[in-house]
Image (cartoon, rainbow, N blue to C red; front, side, top):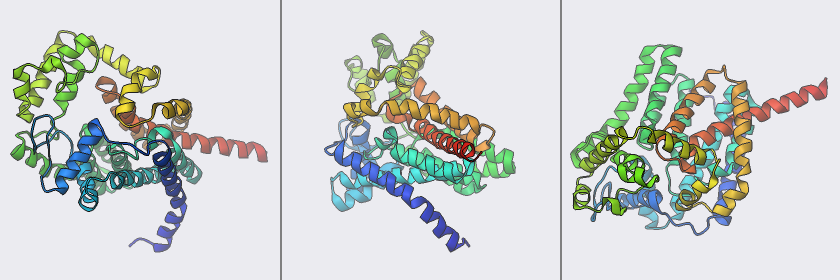
Length: 406
């Protein structure tokens, strides 16, 4: 049984971080994006939650012409949106408020993780950096999955650090139902536990994650005809690597682009699983004839991802509901936090938790560079840098205090 006094102490320690994070996100909502309306991915997540609330099941029209069972998006986040739609119909504010709360909780968990690495001051500093960092705030008042994915990622890491393999496995499974490309998270955390406490607990983590995910896979096989977590991989790969994308040297939407207007491709969309497989196969075949294009995509994405050419981010930022003038005004903070984050993490590079953070972040960065890299998908990297910045701030504070007393 947990000690109530210790629990109260933890609450008193971290509630100010939560309050600052919630206040910053509330101000961003009110002052920067008060009239936000969902588009692209955000409108699909909202629509799936609304369909669930109406009793239509996990269904949407895209990429077809009528409502149908889909696996184009993962299920957990729409399921969390559904209660808000049940209570408030098509109002957006309950969903925005949900993400505000989730994003504020991310700041707290980031602080807890940093405190385990660098001490209490580092934890508070990291929590406040996450609470006030504009690239992370921007994700937390719109209907996108990034805040939930970060919350589950931190939960899985913290549970694994406590050797609570079952809880970590459950968080990993839920992460896969939020962000399916996080499969290496399971492998990295399982390997960490394997090395720390033995192979049984490492495999146990994998087993629990599988138990969480399997019901969704069975549902997809029965209703959509695929054992895959989602049917959007083919869309993404084709938009980046298929022949039309290579010819345009840009993202080409396989649903709305005239390059896919032939009847063969249009009819294929009515079999979501088959369409996904077809686009994947076409893209792989196109890439075989131009393997160097991978480097072209990676370099272009790196320029946008690391803000070397911010103009590449103008369109995705607009689609994701971010005000361009505001993000440009606060853009210097990205470089400051990134440099400080690298310094802070490097100083604690021998800590196994920092190694795990680095591996997890590298996975998500690599996927973004190889596929698509809008700033919102940079969230795991931004989170890691914010944690590292907290560690750097604590180190600088300790160094200053030591010089002041010497």
